[in-house]
Length: 356
Image (cartoon, rainbow, N blue to C red; front, side):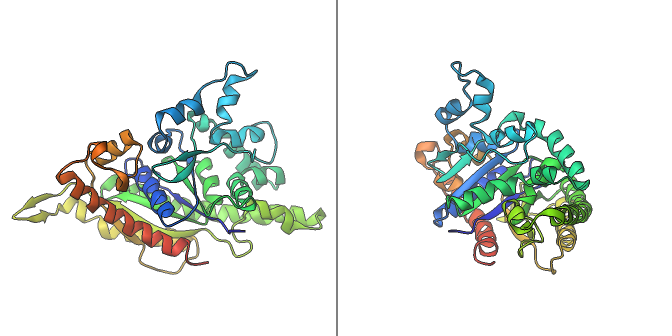
């Protein structure tokens, strides 16, 4: 049985190219022979729209008029279906997931749903209740671990990637509880820098709180259970069985640079933030108990209209061709973008898949 690895690209600021980068990394992993499940946990559903074609999304989101509950039928074909039992008070997710295969990306997609924003309150309540040593709520906040364990037991995938929205809310916190590692895409500007700093402080707070939660609930299980390990296994708890959330590093989305005399003209207002990102990255790593390292995974160039072209074609950047409307100098530009993405993907792959 394959041991699944889990990854999220996560930042609390939008507009940093997170979905473009994560979906293309998923494609690169598939090209390496990995069986990939991409879980769209962003209520905006941008990844779902990018990776699946119109026929697939129409089939997923169409309401079934013959069903007694047509809305629930549609919800169950998306990631929202996982949470229906949790909304009904159950501690375990619905493991019967409905995935669609993206031919051009080469991965399976668990589609997102706008109603996923409703799960924020559910996870907030579960988190607070779990802090009070209520073990059913403790299971609910580990829904992502339950999903990954189910896929691992069925030997369906080698990696599960979670796409999340730009939020520091409880829901994204529970996504990270199911991850082995995460990456933070950023842009080199003032607002991205401040968002990155917020992220570092957030990790310092919630990792300490999670430690208290885990200790308390394991204590409750130990009171009565003869096999705490069996209870904990489906949740993929951090700090148990050698599992810890690992910070792999950050990427920067480059600003548009002008050229003069064949040389790029750097803008001081942007360039002065480069070194500051590294400082905040070290703070995130410190909060997770990691040793110092070089956390810059790579720089992603501004790709102009290429992501929009990829969205229209439901294709990874690497798969775009003349038939998708990419011609002339755009083909060379595309190859340059792909090289940058693949370098980042290689750095992530080597840390996530080639080490234990």
